[in-house]
Length: 294
Ligand SMILES: [Cu+2]
Image (cartoon, rainbow, N blue to C red):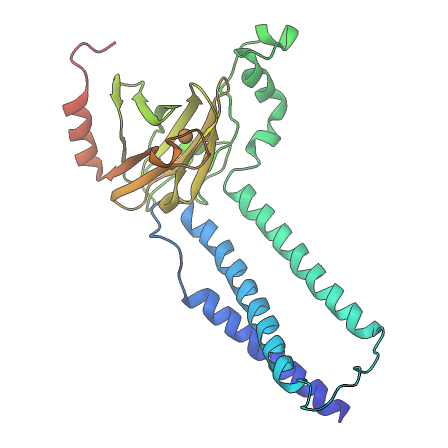
């Protein structure tokens, strides 16, 4: 009898895990992927979705089964059997969540690092000066230090490293230079400025396959720059530049959404990122470059 129960439990668990993996890999809840970050992020999402599906089905099935199987028979007014403690069961239901949570934590950290999220911690010492240099927080002697690029967060695809965003290659082609764009967020709009040629735009236009580096700062309150199709989100903070790097991999128009409650019209704080083929981007750039370039 004990063996039969054990075999049934093992088979049911295997079936659950298989169903979870199937659902996690086959059902796609995410929008189209349009940046080199997306694959890295999506692999994590699939794992989380598989684990979530397995746990949800496991709990729901046992719950529904118990409701029916152990329902009080009509006319039975007696108390239930007093059951107290079951050491093996308690070990199992502590060990399984512990392993799952540890795995998810370590795997998420790895993904975050591969996307460049740990870059600010790696070169924290150098960046500290830059971040503090030109803002209200007085950092004493540090304020006079030469200010290198303040990098608070860089989201960079798997093809490159956080230290060298310019090393991105597309299909083995020669590395393309990084396109810098300055982003200003304010209640309730994003403004994009291309320091290379003085274009200022309400929409972000970027070329396909070329690394883009956004240097972002807010005028008033904290905003967040979010492009779901790029799988990227980064806070935009007053008085402190945050950096977000990406390489677009799919032409098209995608929404930019402010993802930090920033005031009465926060819900309307949206813009668009347009990913052009390189020639089309050059055309857009030529058309919009101000005549009196600074
Ligand atoms: Cu906002």
